[in-house]
Image 1 (cartoon, one colour):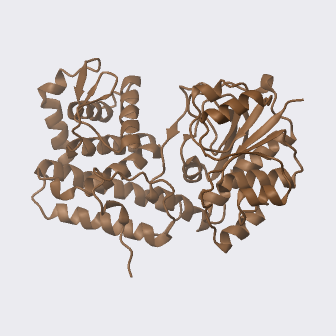
Image 2 (tube, rainbow over the protein chains, first blue to last red; image 1 turned 120 degrees about the vertical axis):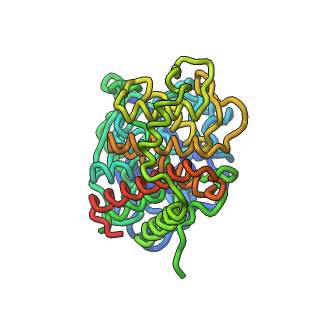
Image 3 (tube, rainbow over the protein chains, first blue to last red; image 1 turned 120 degrees about the horizontal axis):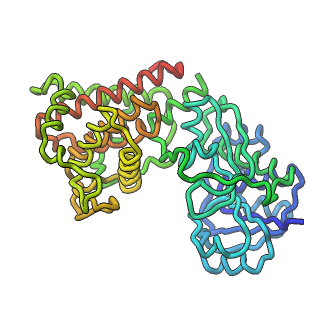
Length: 229
Length: 205
């Protein structure tokens, strides 16, 4: 059996991943929480309700969710994926795959520490690499997608594990709620269907496709308004 | 109180805007964007501008001796020459992988630092520290809009919007009539493409 872990950060994406893991009764072998005790983002009632409809609890902190559900975890007092303390811990962890939720760009040292790191990127690669891809795909295709892939030194160009498409949302809470939902839903698919089989991963050609940059507010409004028109 | 388009009020060359997690404001945001762009276009139009700036530009570029001898494999490039050459190549559809690669690299440079330098070396690393020449920003925006027109790839329209915000945040520093004419043309094109996109997506502005 493959040993699987997750590296959480104090943000909405980690809350979504935890919610879906608990709802689907998926147990992981190692939970790491990078926690610098920052004040987590507060959400409006509308956002909390929309998140609940997706099965995500965003009204409590990551630490509270972990504590209330008696989930054992290893806590670090920083949010930096390349911190040497974290790298050393990971080297000893005997875990095959770690789910990455955020905390920076992975450098060579952590990438070569032993386990493979899985990222759920909100875009169908190679067509949508880079930043805020869901907005671009809403405008272009009226839908969004997520790619689960193995992280390497190139941006969104690692071996593909699984891809899933979603209809565009009918609400405006895309940055936090919808993004967290589609990523965590894809994570659930990967874990429930035992898709972490290295032989089945498919290689990408890093020279094919498109890389996008942070969407300009005008295009962001075009995308969101096209969802709620 | 009526909300103004907020992305051109600061000097974006000195205080670059990263546009990350920008707030969704509602349909009124697109109205404020349109009003701001129209207002700026009108300011330029009050001046004595070239009427057919694009063809004037093409003539200038074609007759520019720096450009007729321009090569891609040089030790260093004047950004203005590099962008002018790229524009002519795009416009005349002499499109190849090198042009595509250089345009993408310049877009990446701008997207990361939100600045364009006077010169770059053969690996497109910046030379020197001068990033204030507005004609470079105008020319890159023009290339992006042309590429958007040809490909409908939103990446190019996206960068053009950011470039145009940056230039507008420095509007009073554009003192050359030709640059004013060209930028006015760029703003009109940008606004037109956004209007078409809104219409296509069923959004009333």
